[in-house]
Length: 452
Image (cartoon, rainbow, N blue to C red):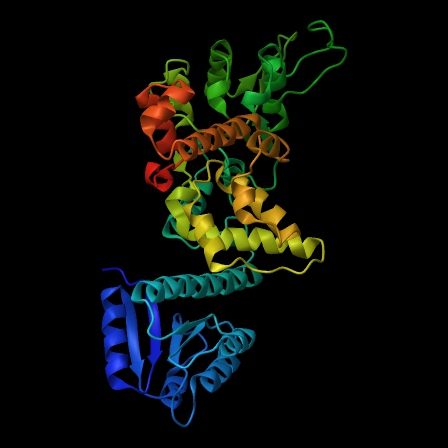
């Protein structure tokens, strides 16, 4: 079993200590027992990755004294006090002194396990933040651009540094909001063309009648409204990198001209017969599988697909969610010189259970709003009561993401209304069963969360 976290358990009663230790071990914790506060303090190191659980009433040094001494050595250590002689005043005093929680005996073992789980998650988040801050302070490399400590992000950074040195065209695959343009920038900045232009182009945002002019440029008088010569993106990126986002949106008739440019290394402006040489690297990005896509030329696909990168979604690196949220929220608060209060344990759970259809773009938006107003309700930010208006007001979110968020919220609200009754939801939304299943899977919606 994968351990949930490390626990220092301090209790002078051997039977209670052993029984609690056995229960926590079965629950998946790595427990170290101590019969007195002094021996626990002697073993406590500043980089201890776990938490401290201690009885209050003990000889020589009691639990409250241990709390005080432990926090002097490790200020952010989660300490949970357990006592059979508690009172409201004692609990309030303990929390004011820095205790993570206060539990009375006889305690519900399940509640103890849940509390310890949240405390261990908080401790890991603190250590990850410290590690991240050390990386950001001590490094000027790719870690300052692509934040995350998960194996998936470490692998992505390694692949970027490797492919950056291979001066070929490539395709970046990833869902909306995963950071495809940022990855393309890193490929450019850490490659041999870093001193030359990086030119981004969103193929999905260009009207079809302007696409050719945007890519290849035009001479004055080439068409109605062409009052002066204009250099296209291919020519502007000469020597550097052209990043073509949402390349699956490129009109089929223009794919032939792009293919020819990549094959021959020349462009021809609209209204001009002169061939102009260009030397550039093309990085394409898509959320679709271009191989076998009927609307995308396969010869162009193979010309671009000399290398490829896959950017994991937030669902695939859930361990980075609290870290990223904390980073962006603190960044927003610091920029406005505001005090910042970290999320509670329950809020961390809310963050990690949310499906994040908009990935890092959506997370950064929510974290920024939270950092600017720490007193706001995080659950309301993630699931607004008026989702359509709320999402449409979010600066920086594209229309497609707003539609996805609205669609996911409508499904959640309907499931809530009918208490998870799928047949009722199908009738209310007028959807086929297969379509509803696909959308629930896409947005990470679990029917069991809405049943009584």
